[in-house]
Structures are given as structure tokens and as C-alpha cells.
Image 1 (cartoon, rainbow, N blue to C red):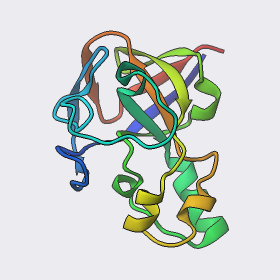
Image 2: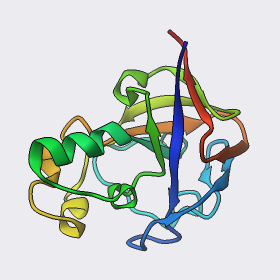
Image 3: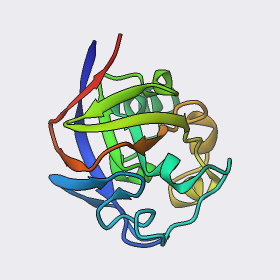
Image 4: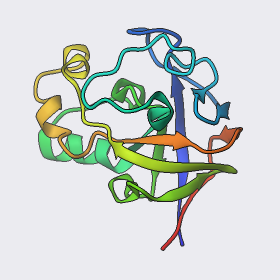
Length: 157
């Protein structure tokens, strides 16, 4: 079993709205995080078409922010990734098709969340290429629960 932790929780109330940080948030099965643009059907998706439930929440590795700065000289704040949960100590790309828990909330990794041109428009040139295969993970929430900063992210071996 691998255990990482949640080190950031972010939502946006509407398409294009700035991401807002939280200490704790409710997660709803098949929907998303309380008040997030996708949970309230006020967001826009780009890329591969998935059922809404299959992209209820997105995860991003804190370690990838460090790589972005070290390898490309690009500094992004966690909320600038436009992903919901910043985690550390977990290789999210390895979780496609895997059930795992965030705090007490069971999830299933569905697909890589490749960065979109909107992210680059909001940040700086080069982000799109630098985050290729490092853009995070789209996940399905399998049961309702609460996610809090510092919660463990537990994956099977």
C-alpha cells in the first residue's frame, strides 16, 4: 500500500473563475466537489469525451510543480493548474483503472488530465508542452465523504 497526502484543495464556482482554496470540502459520488464548476454543471471540458461522473475530480502531483520549475523555469501556484486536489507522494499517472481513497472518500482513476490551451493562456508559453503527461488525473468519486488538507491518499500496491 502506498500512502501520500492531500496538500491542496481547490474549486472554481464557474467556468473561467479563479480557483479558491479550501481546508476541507464535501465530495459527492458521481458529481464532484461541493461548489465546483463541474459539480454544479457550470464548467467546460476540453479533450477526450468522458461521462461527467468519470471526471468528477482532478488530482495533480505537487512533485510535478517542482519539476516544472526545475526543468523548464516555469513557476505555477497550485491553483493555477486548475486541478481540484494537489497531492504528494503518489504517482497519479499510475492510478488509471485503480480504486484508491482520499481521506475516507473512495475514488477510481479514469484518465490523464492533459493540459489544455486555456491553461497556457492563463499562465505562460511553454506550460502546455512542459506538462505533457504531467497534467494530472481525472477521477470518479465512488461514495460521498469529506476531504481535508493532510488527509492520506492510499493506493493498493
